[in-house]
Length: 521
Image (cartoon, rainbow, N blue to C red; front, side, top):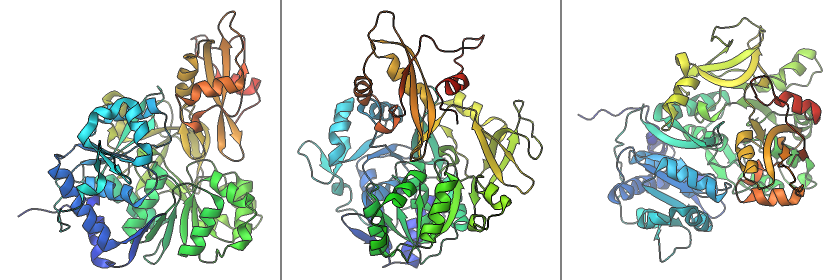
């Protein structure tokens, strides 16, 4: 008798089809589908992928904006025993090529709008293993050919809960992309904990505006599926489109990044939308300015909840700040807690370690470390980096912080120099490497500047080569556009220096750069 592992995340659509059947599951800009239809189509897709040659453990990459097809590919690949690999559509061509080369997908499924990027990245050799969503091409097969003609009946997943279900990429400190391995157990645990902590109900309608090639967007997609919610996907964030979706679909819950919330508050059209259905908004992915949060609470009257996580904590969070801590009663304690990331999630254990990995006492500042069923399996094909970041069974976040006597967690600084801009992780070394390739640049250092809209924006400090002419700002930005995604560009400013400050070991002192250029965090 075949044993079915109930922790497999691939079975969530099947369970929903039994419980909710004809209830609307997904809504995007062009269509909508029920739980029953979604389950049937993903079963057919799994069979189509296997018929085309997909074997257990092989990868299926998807390059597309938020759409129902993305979710189908995620679950279809999982049901076939494969691994789904969402690719960021905002990446530059060389960056897409890095990911495809590293993941070595058996199949690449791309929206027709993004085929030029894929081909330009040197992946035309995939040939018959490329499938197109939308308008077809005489060179490539249509995505629907993987579904049409294949049975939608139940399919047994050839995997265990420790097997990889999804590979999602985040840039590493070296500037090279790192694939974060999420197992079925990771996804199941994170979706369950998120649904409980966010207090969602089966009757909720969830809105997903964050891209579902990014951890935050995937987190909402998966936790909503676990809870049986109708889920509305928005292709790109636009305040009027967002508010219109709330009114049209009677949305009750959503996840939002601080930059989105600020744009909503700046919209002059708020009053013409009926937003009475919205009950709870969860925010995260970047530091939330407390003043912005206060204005939003008073302006909208929604219940707000904070969440903090990382790509390495799978599609879930390490901590939550509940609505009860968003009551604006003027008390110093409530004010202080708005600056925290809340208390540890029900499936995560959070501690503060010193440099020797010994636990620190309450209130002492050290590195935030986590363990739990939501922690990634590791980095794809990077055993040394995996061993370092998961040493002694704890995920070392690189964030510095402390836990107070009531269990609230506070981040005070970043051990690493990562910049979070608009909810996206931006690593300075990646931008520095691109700048270093400019013919006039001797060396460069990148730091983050606090930004009221994006959380942070990159700032570059450049040392020019001897006798080189100083390039104009627009020239440098144009040079970088072909190498980096738009959100990685140093929009916070470009400065020129005679030399970069260094310590005795030759390491650039970025803290001094922040002081010199007035961009301290």
